[in-house]
Image (cartoon, rainbow, N blue to C red):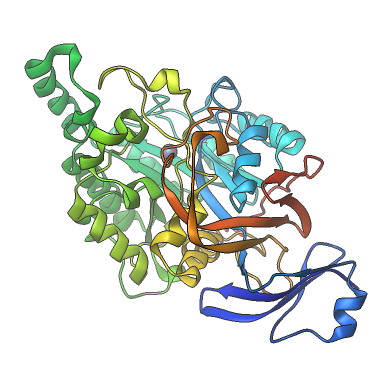
Length: 448
Ligand SMILES: [Zn+2]
């Protein structure tokens, strides 16, 4: 029995786009994907038949790098608020990072977050457990069929979850029972840059110096160190929010995603902006790692287009606009993006490429059970996207995130999310969230 049928759609897969239809059964799984028009009796018998009118039908995006700020930082965001922003933007699953308060560095803290998400998330959800200098046993005993992997901060970032003990790092890479996602920025390089800037400007240094404070070399040094450790111990390593052309040389090339030891993601910020944009956007594009040069941005765009970089993830990191004021040293780093990642990436890349880097590849990389593509037997996480020929302009007033602003305020986009299904149920229509829907925990096929 067909529950939902979406037909007359440009159905997007990593292999291409073809006009056809997708049928969903009453249990929320895709039962059929086919080219052309469905038989009239299929349209007549479906509980809900949607004529897409030629719009793009894409797999729901899986954002494997978000900071939804709960517990502890709920003045900035909550899992409920940000999961709504995610779904409105076509992101049907998310994996949240551990720098909350308290930090997610124990199995008990992971369970607390799972409970918060079960009650309030409209998207499907999972969490990383964070590594510290002294939580080795927690990392070893976590259940990686439910936990996405281990987040490691090599270099300072928000939350001070820095692993700087060399023996703790070696031990972690040697024994890691799951993929390690690394935030790689070398602390010593940043400290040296900070001393130089303070000598020159005192405490009044402008935000525009953020890329000088956190330069390309800091990223390269830490990523190189992490890759060396991963290759020495045969550890699966994922470089989060890669920002420089130099780091691309560290990646595995010319092999299937499943065969890679080293994988990577790029965030929309670093594909959209460069250090030349601080003058216009100021602290709205102050984030860690920093935006880099135009040459870096060009290299990253090419690497996403040709498959060298495996996925796009937002590093959605909402702060109140009031916290983004002031100088280099007191405007906080991080920006929201989850609501607009899909339409902004459709500005830069073909729909089949976007489906690969935002849905299929994240699912394959993290070994997520039956998600990431429109195929029979998969969960029906689907997004219907209208092409808007004349474009429309995004403004802060469109933002569903609790913080109420977006760095793409004023940007013109040419794709708009019309409808979103999560687990086969309509979760968002024309930008309106249907609040009674709840997501599911993601399941992972991680081997110990
Ligand atoms: Zn992050």
